[in-house]
Length: 87
Image (cartoon, rainbow, N blue to C red; front, side, top):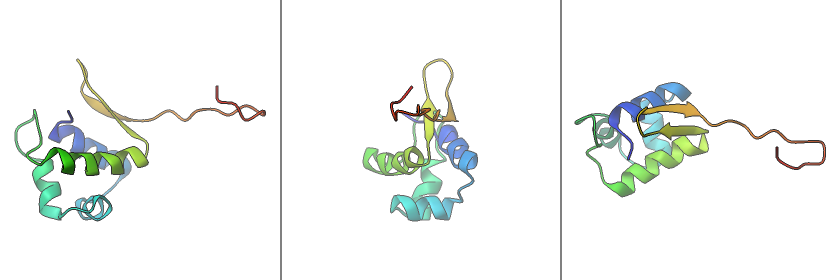
């Protein structure tokens, strides 16, 4: 599960406005506002909506960290060797 604080941080990390995130996720701006508000444990939007929002972040390379250290970070890029195989 991703918290509202993580959603706000992810959006800030890649410099998206709420309007742009809403457009890319195919949801309304009020839905984005709701997903980023509420209690700090769970967004107040459906799982389907959370999945749409997370897909936008995943496409931009954002990872959500959970466990003892909630947060967001950019996914590491896989280095390519001259042969084309991943390291």
